[in-house]
Every structure is written in C-alpha cells, then in structure tokens.
Length: 272
Ligand SMILES: [Zn+2]
Image 1 (cartoon, helix red, strand yellow):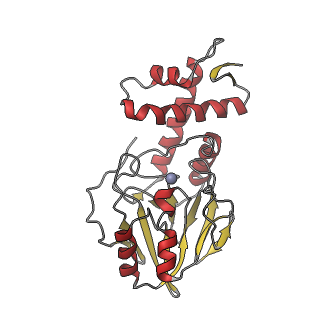
Image 2 (image 1 turned 60 degrees about the horizontal axis):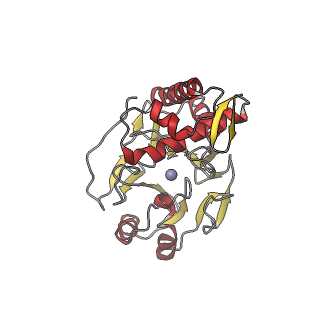
Image 3 (image 1 turned 135 degrees about the vertical axis):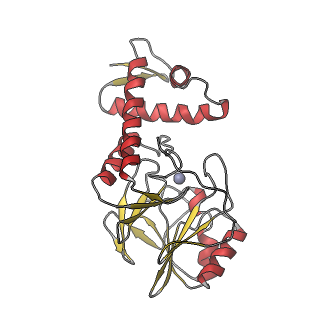
C-alpha cells in the first residue's frame, strides 16, 4: 500500500495545512502513533474548534492554549482512545470549552458535554459514525472536500481493529462509506495529510478482503487457534507485533462467524 511518511515534527510548533486549518502534533510518537497524535485546529467565528486534543500531556495542552490564545469554542473527539481524549479534561479546564463525542463513548470514565450522533452538524462539521477501529468513532466532514478521519483512515498505516470494541465488518463498511463520498483531502489522527485518498482506501479494503480469504483458506475441520493462523500468514513478523496481528485475525474470524462461514470452540476456529 502507498503509505505516506513525514519527518518528525518540531513538537509544539503549529503548522497551517490549508487556510483555516492548523495542525499541532502531540509529543507521543511510537509504533502505534507514528509521529504522535494530530490535533487539528479550525478557526471559526466563535473561536477555535479543536479536533482530538491528544494524549494527557501538559506541554501539548500548553501549546494548544498558546496556539488558540485560549479561545477554544469546542473540543471534538473522533473517538475516546487515550491518545486522543487524554488531554480533553485539561484543555477544557484551561479554556472552558465543552467536549463533544459520540453518544456512547467507549471509555466509561469519559462523559461528553454534548453527545453526537451520526449526521449531527456542529460548526460546519458533519459527524459520520464510522465504527470499526473503535465503536464510538466519528469522522467529521468539513467543506471543500476535507474530512477529518481520525484513526478510521490514516495516511501512514492501516488501522488497528481489535475485538471486542473493534469490529472488522463495521470497519470495512466504514471504508465503503468513505469510498462512496468524493472527499479530496483526509486529515487523520496520525500521519501527514492524505490527498487523493480514494486509491489508498480502495487498497485498504482490498487488503482486508485478501486477508480474509487467506484466513479462510487456513481453516479446516480441525480447530485452529488465531496464534497458529498468525504464524502461517505473517511470516517473519516481529515478536512485538504478534499480539496485534492475533487481534486482527480474531476480528476477521468474528466477521466470518457472523456471516456463518466459520465457527469457534474453546478458542479454536474451523470451517462451518
Ligand atoms: Zn484509536
């Protein structure tokens, strides 16, 4: 897949991506977060709309307050994984801005001031419920073909889909939902902006369909554990990534089970 790369940013420095949209990358780089979480700042008549305040990081919150002059109108969450929502309460305390997130947050200890549902419009942004990576995931479609895609579609890598909150069938449906739109620029939760996004989304969907067929081909009458399937399909995989691969395989198996094509018994999986 044609993923994008970018150099490590100067943490704390604000970058204008398109007129009215700025990005501040949080200082939480890592194998799952690339250069760090992207916090997006949208200038508006009533102040700045912040999308994904990022991880619990005092320097990042201070940089956000400085970049917005403290004039934050609202804090939107694409989903409530901690690298996106961790800074929400500190930024709210510093600016008085309300938080907005999907009506049923995945995190039990986070309660948005304003719950959002699919199709809700707030500050020129339309919320699209796109579960799969996270059950509470929203994309926010803006104007001029720009959409904030959170961790649903990212330019630098595929998304993690880890059951039970992650759902492969929903994730693939969500990819198809984006493919049916004609957005021209994706601004994701990690990684650089993604222009002409359709080709990558199509490749992501094709990758998942190929993976599903490969998993199905490993199954037989004898039950097989997801770890054994990982060993067969992901040759030479780094030991540290095996656990994540196992979660992905499980996500595919659960989709196949829901479709009546695979069955499980005591952790083992076989053909129906
Ligand atoms: Zn996430």
